[in-house]
Image 1 (tube, rainbow, N blue to C red):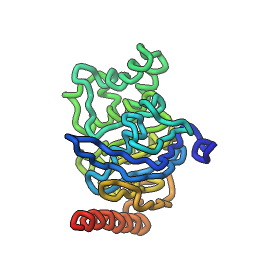
Image 2 (tube, rainbow, N blue to C red; image 1 turned 30 degrees about the horizontal axis):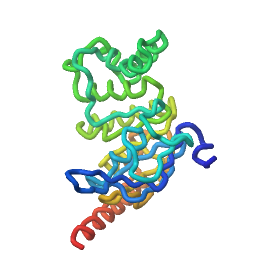
Image 3 (cartoon, rainbow, N blue to C red; image 1 turned 90 degrees about the vertical axis):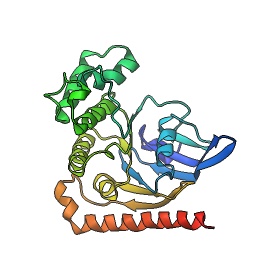
Image 4 (tube, rainbow, N blue to C red; image 1 turned 90 degrees about the horizontal axis):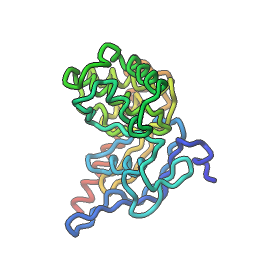
Amino acid sequence: MSAAARAGVGAVEIDSVVKVFKRNRLAIQALSETSVDFREGEFVSLIGPSGCGKSTLLKLIAGLDTPTSGEVRVGGNPVRSPLRTASVAFQKPTLLSWRTVLDNILLPVEIRDGRPSRADRAYAHELIEMMGLQDFASHYPKELSGGMEQRAAIARSLVTRPELLLMDEPFGALDEFTREDLNEELLKLWEAEPKTVVFVTHSISEAVFLSDRIMVMSARPGRISDVIEVDLPRPRTPEIRTSAEFNELVRLGRISLEAAKAEHETAAHA
């Protein structure tokens, strides 16, 4: 058994994974051979140039797509179909307009079990309170702000108590103030119920604030070109964003990301 498997059910192993898409007889390589492990309970962010395969890697981990070659394992088990132990949060909240906040949050439980139990409903209400939506449980999406919709979507992704939470730019469309506020709420939820989180973002400062490690991806075909260890103390408060250590990590992230972009431009003109 591998070290990652022994670490627990939320551990992720990406083993020599390659992904090629076929489009109109053309072969487009999204990921070159990629190998990396995510430890159980670790918060990892993926950053990189647009189109570098961040979302593709997330889908492979979730079992929503399959590698062309190589293998993805979660908890030591090969991923060959959508994972019941994983939950995905996307950039758009995609709440159902005809369901209330509470009913939207409980939707994954209904899909899994058919009918939410009393315990499921109690946990949904707990998540609603943790996300500051206690006055909006019976409201419909059209009655919410964008930030409120995203809070509801995050609560929905957590209601099944997943071992693995995959987040694809969940705050990308929000204003900076709302984004920072939700960063803090997400960390509180993660600290209260630790789980493995793989978080895709274009914001280096967001990645530094949230993460244990930052994986920098090169341009397509994507691969892990750098790993930045974030050794800032936890729990993290908003004040840490003004510290010298925080800003040095942001600077290192920018340097690494610029190197990944330069590599892409060199390859494009070769």
